[in-house]
Length: 474
RNA sequence: GGCGACGUAGCCAAGGGGUAAGGCAGCGGUCUGCAAAACCGCGAUCGCCGGUUCGAAUCCGGCCGUCGCCUCCA
Image (cartoon, rainbow, N blue to C red):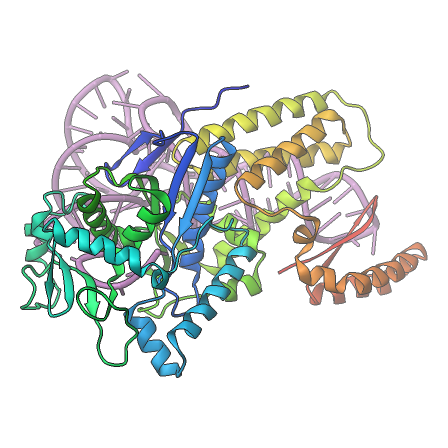
């Protein structure tokens, strides 16, 4: 067994990198905040889930056994509003978007969580948690609502680095006279007529947003977990409130050992969000690009940094991906012995090491990818010289393995251009046969016409000593 | 107003005290019937000003600019 570098992760709570030591190795309990399912996911969501998928995959590769829980928020103001507008039940609305979301995650090769709790199905656990908070004096009831008593929690603000006084000063929240403190947040909301509701000790109502994650995390992962993740926009108030609820309820600190947050995706200099309306949906991207290109785009920068979406960046990712694909192609048949083959094996081992060093430093995928591009270049260079041997095979295996650790899907079909390629394969094969005959007869004009016209259709032909290769280009 | 992040070649981006990974684009070349792909070669002194240091893109201070959070949000 070779030894791997110590893994360190940046913890939002302490604002520094820390050695990664889960509570009970090799188990890692990871909770990632899921979407509120009232609309289609945009690429900002996609980015976040690709990031945490990469993190999970790397942990698993390092031998950890990750238990991954991700919620669906299916009870919430916007859901109620939207379903009323569309004249459908909230269940039909949320089910529709949950189904779509899971399909998109599959398309992006994001591993499914082990459990996907729905807020609406955890009401009993939520009520129990709220009752506990009331008993301990951390919550109070007003007209069927229940609020968390922020002033009672000495630690409030520790995640986001805010003090109660600062928050009050800049508070933009509407003042609700019934609350003891403007910053107290709702654990339970009394139902208004016509709204979905559940029975509770405080009358019919529904859970507040923050409480569901505390309840689900507690229910499926226990009182203390290793990793809690989400977008940086969730740090305050959502995750701050989760800490308050969970730690006050269980009396155990820390609720979460490592808080991890991904930087937000920007579009045109602004955060992409549903409320700003400046969004690109995941479907639009999946229609236009290889899902691996989306992943490469995301992993090309460090996960904590904000990234700006541009068509150019995406095109760059798509093109870069094709270099990796080229490096994974089967080696040519007629090979030559060469001394460089042994050097290539060495290169593969160095790359593996560089990869682990980069990834161990708070998942530095951008640096890791740099090493993989170097390896890909070496492989392609060897192919060009036809010096193929065991080293070449090892290098290809290494490249494939490490790209898969990052979550790239490297099937033959994917590399060729996805399902679209499979659909047109028989016809393309026919045209290539015809063109090959023309080339034998040196009828270049006609042969080139076929190639050009196929290119217009997005099908690229490449003549190689092993015959004509093709793939779909986007 | 409070808290925080960032500013590196045309674009994206890593690094973070000893003279700048990688990707895309571009240019030149090899290969090719021509292409494509691939490979080889070519580019930056790191927002501005000042300080610390033998030495700073990397540390400190100030300034300018961009962005995020403080309200629903991955």
